[in-house]
Image (cartoon, rainbow, N blue to C red):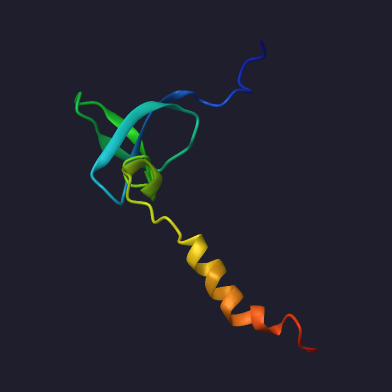
Length: 86
């Protein structure tokens, strides 16, 4: 294996800015910010906008679209134009 060609693989804290959620994992991502973690050590910090803690799919707060109502409304609006010339 060649030396000095691989990125630095180290512990990094990823923090969800939308909620109070952060996790420590290993990564090669670069960051200029640091944070003191629960164990008292300082780690690089990467801020995220969406994680599993705030994403609607994982929290169960996603909006289910009413596709049948939209199709019926479309047919009512444009269905009468079937026999007419445009």
